[in-house]
Length: 121
Image 1 (cartoon, rainbow, N blue to C red):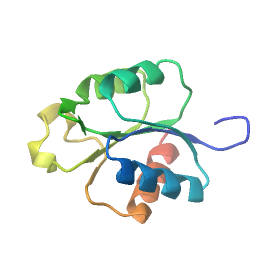
Image 2: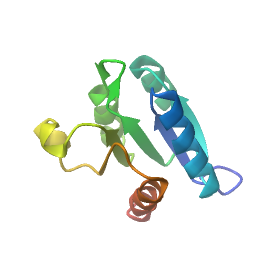
Image 3: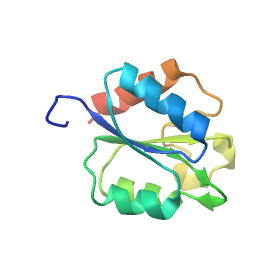
């Protein structure tokens, strides 16, 4: 939690309008947004320097898959919410049990998922 008492959500999303909607939904629900980051390299670098309690990750960043970042965050025990257009069954097996929202999703589902992740910390 940051000094103003808000939980921080690390956002990785390469589609501008989707990123904007995620940010608006999170801010309206009282969260602080870190990002959004639009490339795998930028998101990995930022994840190593920024402080946050939970992460939302688009899996396909302009053709680059975000699994290296997912692995790193899981290793650091950071709760991860996958945001993807892929069906859960299309994900590599080791990621199928992670919390996931299939695009398109609505803000209510996003906020509910974030709250669930934070409540299990």
